[in-house]
Image 1 (cartoon, rainbow, N blue to C red):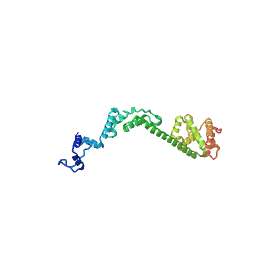
Image 2: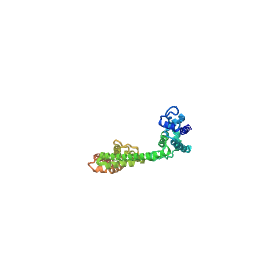
Image 3: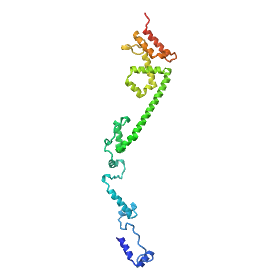
Image 4: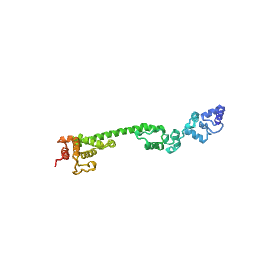
Length: 298
């Protein structure tokens, strides 16, 4: 109002005063010289808080204020539940209400995730995964699902393929070492080990050897080969019906004949091959069996 009054007074002033004011040479009836200082566009009587708010936001005129008012009017029209208020302290433990408003479940039971034993994400593993996601990362349901489908599952698949590749490599390396260790008798000695396992082993043992890779471990193969030899040799292991035939204990002729047939079947290649590493030893053992199977008459 005061600014308008000033403009009205200025318009009613004599022409010579206006000219003096413009030229800066008159003193308007003996008063102070020069035009009055220009007021800010929002008026000189604005209170300090209003002045600070205007200058802080960098408003240059009424148009800026009008635009701000329009935007605020639109914001005020948004439902309360759609307004997201961020606290000054943005630490994770201070943003509980914000996470909840965004859709974070109250507890891990709120996550729609099914156990998956194939990738090892079930039981305690799944529970721990969800606890970390809920308590530490404050994840929403869709974020947890994305982590599982786009990160965890591909990672476990890759690790599984890598483990399978390592297992195959270990198998091939073990087989090569066993072939080197058994030499020309490889097929025979492996066949003897397989016969031993087939006769005295069971499904659980086969599964164990397969899963652990010990079935192709050169050290284990050497051990089993030695056991297979002892089983095939008479007088080296306890006999049937609790009778110990170790250290010279004798078999009945019928027992020795049965042992001889099996012994020759298992060791056929080595018995007829003079260059075989076990030929001499096996020939001596066969002679012992023959002596017991067909004893000389007294």
